[in-house]
Length: 235
Image (spheres, rainbow, N blue to C red):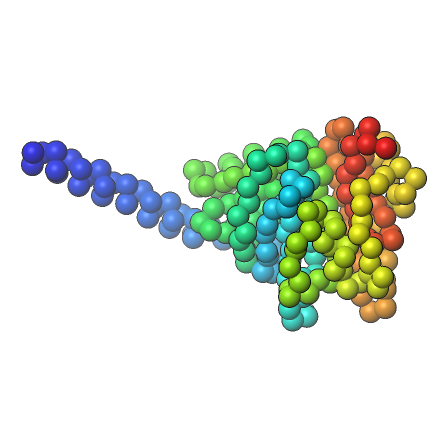
């Protein structure tokens, strides 16, 4: 009986030790140095992260200049019907051209469009971080949208694009984006895998870009600063 009890104590001690080692290893990673070693851009802005009814991941980046304002939005479009991203925050991230790596809640989360470039980046990250807790979400479209969204506004829209279009302070007469493509695209359209647009409304600069994986085309609209991916047979 004493031997069983002793064995249990040893196992619990071992588990606690390993857990502490993992946490210490997580905290010891310097995101600034990591960004330099994997070719990304380090961001210290506060980030708000959530998922939408339309199988999207929405990341809002706080402005370092204006109070209570989000200045950049990142959206991953996916086909994952079971996507679950609990609402969370992050104060450290590494941005790439078509993806972003978040450090939050004692784990790393890689979010980006499903293309070879990101597969290579993810492998490089995994090699650098070793056995640390890393989750990845790859989708068919990754968008970056610059504008201004008040922190007081809540996202109650089914789509991240609807929310961003409706509440972007840069869109003086904002309309809901909708899903259209083809002739309604200012830039991009059928056959395009990426597109970008930019504009200035008063003192506010607004722009967006998007990259799509196979089976989708890029569609960018200046009417409400929307850049998204549309299924090839959607029109």
